[in-house]
Image (cartoon, rainbow, N blue to C red):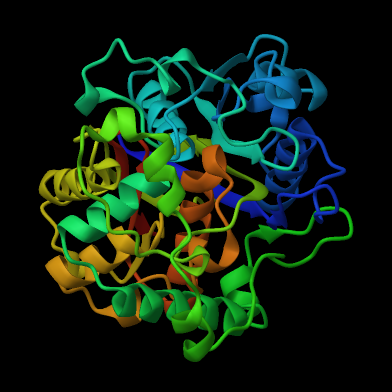
Length: 383
């Protein structure tokens, strides 16, 4: 059964701080605004929705209490519709869409809303205080290390230079700044309250980037119990990392008969695992899987949204796969616009569909990676 994406929208992203542009909102309110937008844009009635699946990493406080169910109630979705909240770290939003597509394909449901939300201004990183974060019962190689430390370790192991990272950070910021005035590339971005732009984008130059010191060396001392004497060589500055932001993304998924004019057909999807120590490499595994599933090549992708989960994996993508960089992250990426963790995968898909529309392209690819070896990828065909 062919699966289609009727629409996919994303919120603007606000800085994750008390005075950030979205900080006064609620997580369920952000998703609710996207449900409203989908209904208004594509003539999808919320009364037709059978399931809501949301990815969210920090499922405590404002995002606790089963945030998908809270959103369902607050957004007047049908009483009989099911609600699922999932956590697959930073690929949660894309995993949610993949799971919704699988349910449609299996004939369990007809129409699903799926995506993710994260408000880091209200629920901070690692706010769940999981025992795993400090549990020394695991073998050292399996213990938790923050993804930023994993990125620095990966940079040293693969000899990703600071210049490579700064070049890509500059590219991301430059493209994001230019894209702000390109309505085609923002066609599916939804203003929320008084915020009508991605708040974290900042103008910079190469000299400023080069002058910034490595920022994450102290983490190696904090997590020495997990590093088992492994030498560290801190390289990344804060400008090589995505800022923390608030945001949400949401797709509507169904069979061909569910939509009068769907935006895209889902060609292939994969979740993948990988080396927990090399956190940010599982996206490559998922990418290779969907390319094999589809029988398509990277060269056949008209647009690619590669998650800028720090500049390190982005540099490895450019180095090892040699993509046409004019097709990759054409409106900038997470290094510039920010990373609302559970929402990221859905935001990337929405950005991809806008980029494909703007280029009159056919095939598009999303690749996402997260902590402790999680990855996801998706190929879509624009209709």
